[in-house]
Image (cartoon, rainbow, N blue to C red; front, top):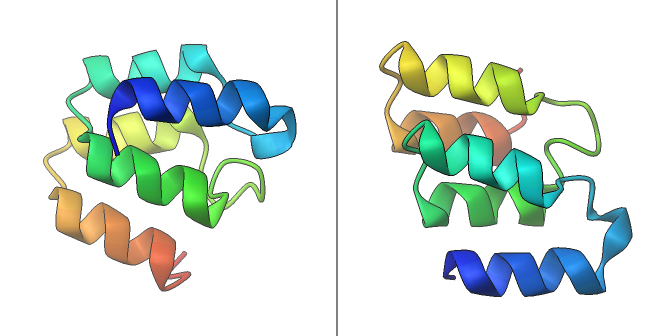
Length: 77
C-alpha cells in the first residue's frame, strides 16, 4: 500500500485514528509504508496500543520494522 493510498483511506475513513500529520511524522522517522499500513489496519493508534510518538521513538531507537509490526499485530505491548 502506498502513502497516497493510505491518505485516501484515512480521508474516506475519518474514524481510522491516524491522521495525515501522524503519517507524515512516521514517514519522516523512516517508518515504511508497509508498517504504516499495519498500523492503520490494526488500529494501533486508535486503540491506544501505541502513540505516533512511541512508534517514532521505537524506530529512532533502532527497532526493526519487522519487530514493530510484530508488536502491533501480536498485541505484544
